[in-house]
Amino acid sequence: MEPFTAIALLVAQYGIKQVVATLTGNQQATDLAGEIFRQLSVSEDRLGSHLTRIENQLDQVLEQPYETAIGAGARGLLDAVATRDLQARREDLMQARERFRDATAAARSQLQHAVAERYLLLCALALNRTDAAKTALDQLNYHATTAALELGDTMVHADRTARAGLEGRGEVRALGKERRIAERVEEIRRGTGEAVRLVANLLSEAAALGQSLGQTQPPVISVVPWERKPSARPKPLWSVVPSDPGPVRVGTFVITWERFKFSEPVSLAEVTGHIRGVEVGIKIEADPPLSRSVPLDVGWGSVRATAISTPAGSFRVWPPVPQALPKAAREYLFNAEVTTTVSSDGKITETPSVRVGVFDVAYRPATQ
Image (cartoon, rainbow, N blue to C red; front, side, top):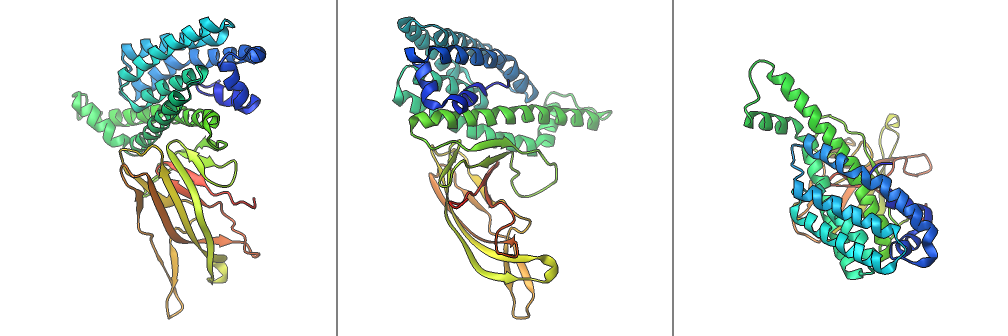
């Protein structure tokens, strides 16, 4: 079992109410308590070495105070879940919570912050502290989302990062320079790839646990295979498929398709198939807002622009104006008119989606 999958799997199997009841010590959930203990033990015991390996590959330092605090807190959390003595459980949880708060103070990267906040969320839920749980959930979403965007930057700029790091340490010489840089690039990309999977699991767990605090059913978040083709457009690292129509949350983002309307049908040459224009209006919210801007783009089909008919009957395809969720903004309305292919009966043959930074979020109509 990969780290961070235990809670999401248990929520899917037993339901969020049952899992939270077990964490809080509900005596009617003793059988599930044993299952949660076994699942968490497998997951948490592998966490430390996994995170250390990732940080080393990315040239980030997993400092001893952070590692010690996380280890002590995880031990206390597991002890609390395993005991049936409610007073002892509460004491273990309070001590574990303090250790995880120490870890947030010692964290040096967004990924480390997200891991610590995930633990604080579990402790707050187990202690029935709803306000503290909401704060931890917001912080988990914030740091996991920021880590996701930073991983996208790292993947795109791996070559630049490798060169700067090796040159800064004086390890790049004329002889064998390109080979050493290529090896470092591959190491960075391997570490990023592992971190991408961890972030996907963190976001999935945050969405699963968020249901206990009033959030909607979580989407399915999966890793997108990385392509090294040069492109000016942001590359998605995660695919997000909503479980239900309506607003979908992934990390700090809440995406709502407010308009999805066919414009007048456009017919091109027979060999190109059936083409129709689509007007879309998508509200992108950041809750909480981020300290950086996030590029936005429509993410489906091979045509990502509006086909304009000229008086001569030919067509010109104009690239859409780049859009972005501004730094510290809480909301942005993304408007675009695009063309897409449809079948002979007028149904779209490609899955519509909007690209929010490194996330490709699918559209799910109410009639699906």
